[in-house]
Amino acid sequence: KQEVTQIPAALSVPEGENLVLNCSFTDSAIYNLQWFRQDPGKGLTSLLLIQSSQREQTSGRLNASLDKSSGRSTLYIAASQPGDSATYLCAGGGGTSYGKLTFGQGTILTVHP
Amino acid sequence: DTEVTQTPKHLVMGMTNKKSLKCEQHMGHRAMYWYKQKAKKPPELMFVYSYEKLSINESVPSRFSPECPNSSLLNLHLHALQPEDSALYLCASSQEVGPWEQYFGPGTRLTVT
Image (cartoon, rainbow over all chains, first blue to last red; front, side, top):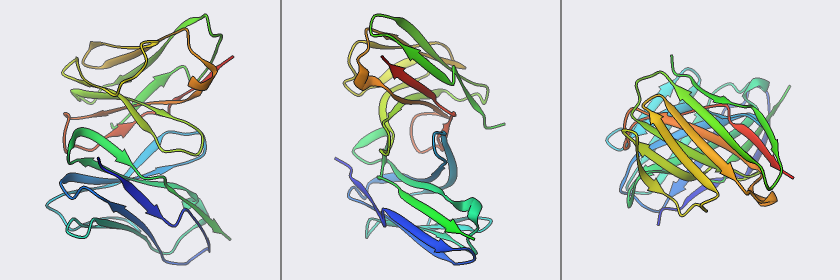
């Protein structure tokens, strides 16, 4: 059974800092890894999707990497802004559970001015 | 357009009521999903539809009844719910079941009294 863990559970940083969110998964047979952002009481916004054959994806100030052999993914946020404050969720797709996304518990990010 | 819409945004229902949640997408996606999210927890998969047929049921109680009347529409019929069923219900869609990006709707906040 796939298990996904995110570290840290919460992170508070001053505006302008570069930061890294970590995600680890137990089933390396995933077919993709997806990062989401969720604002309080809202739905999930897809940030980046990394297929199992890829090593990283970039979108603006966001960069996500995937290392299947070690079971890890990282989300790098450059020059953080208060508007980046949200919960960040990673989810592994597939493996022994084809068709399913298995989510981590999330990292609550607060960027203060 | 990568929009998934859900109605209603909020729903309050008694334990003897029957109500339905609605989800719609016009991206031509053939996979649609229902997730349940409790406060401060990640989303948990409930159902997956592929080409309008139920392909995954995560042992969800029968008081939740999904329906996919066509490729753009997904319903979740609710009957005789319990207070512990109060949660944010999220709908998602993807091109097909498998390694495709999932797009989420804004959710329906359900309160069972």
